[in-house]
Length: 405
Image (cartoon, rainbow, N blue to C red; front, top):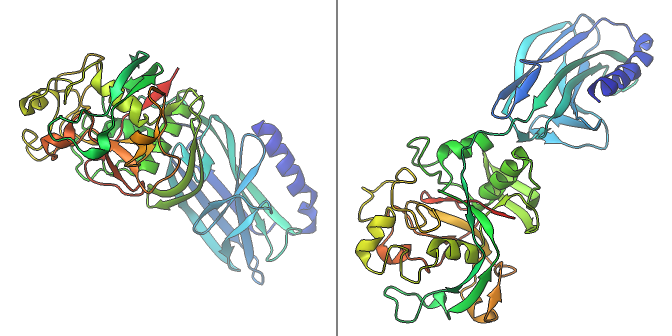
C-alpha cells in the first residue's frame, strides 16, 4: 500500500515538474524507518532556496496506510478538504539546515499514527499561492509496528452471580445514597488484579503526570475520567480488541483530556471502566460486610491503605490481603473511576432484581469507588459512593479496568 501511494504521489508531482525550475529543494525525514509502541518519532525538515527573487511555501502532510492524507499547520494536526495546508515559509536566497520540527510519542492521535501499517511524511515545495508550479517533493516513508505495550496487566475472571448492592440501614458509617439495597444480577466479566500502575499507564499513553510519582508499581493518579477512557481504548487497540468507547469533540489541557462526548459499547470485547455495580460486586467477592475482610475498622488495615496506615502517601499495589476473587486494593490506596454518572437517587429508580445496570443516562459527575490513601475508614467501605466531575484530576484518583466476555 505504501509503495503504491508513494508512486501515485510522485507521479502527480512529476507531471508538473517541467513547469518550474528545480532550483529550490526540500528534504523531510524521520529518525528511523521502523517504529513500535512506546517509541518517540522525530520529523526533520530542511530546505534550500537559491532563487534570489522568489520565496517559496512548503506544504506538509502524512500519508496514511489507507491512502488518505492528513495535513499539518502551526498549532496541531487536522484533516482538511484540501490535501495540504501551508505550514512553512522559506524566503528567497535562504538555506534552512536540517532541524527537527516535530517530536511525539507513539501511538498518538495527532498526527493519527495509532495502528500498524506503512506511513509516509511528505513535503511539497511550491511557489506562493499555487499548487501548479511544483519545484520538488520529498517523502519520509516509515513503518509502524504495533507490538502492543508490555503492561503486565493481569486480568482476573469475575464469575456471574447476584448480590445485594448497597448497604443495610444499620451499617456503621452508612450514607443515605447507598440504598435502598436491591438484588443485582451481574454477568461474568474480567477485572484487573490491581489498580493500573504508573508504569502500565505510561507504557500505553506515553506519559505519566501523577502528582505523587513514586515508581513503576505505584498506582497512577491525577488522571481525568476522560484520560481513563482513552487509556482503555488505546490498550484495547494494542491488544487487538474492539474498542468500547467512541469519543468525539475531544478537548485537551496539555496531555490530559478534559472534555469529550463519550458513548460505550458494552458488547465490545475491549477494555473499559467497570460499572458501579460491577465494581461493588467484584469488591465484595461474595461478602456482605463493610469491607471484604470484615466489619470492624481494624479489618480495613488488612485490605487496604487509608489515612490510618498509609503514612500519608500512596503505596505499591498488591501489598495487602487480596479478596476471594484475587483482587487487591479495592479498599483504599487510590479511588477508582467507574463508568456511571452519579445519581443520588439511582438506587431507588431501579427494579429489584436488577440486571447489569450501567448508571444514570446523564449527570454532572462520574462515580468513584474504593476510597484512598488519605481517606477516613467509613469512606473506604464496599458500599460507599463518591463522585467528581470527569475533567478533574484529584491527586488520589486512579483506575482499574474491566472487560466483557
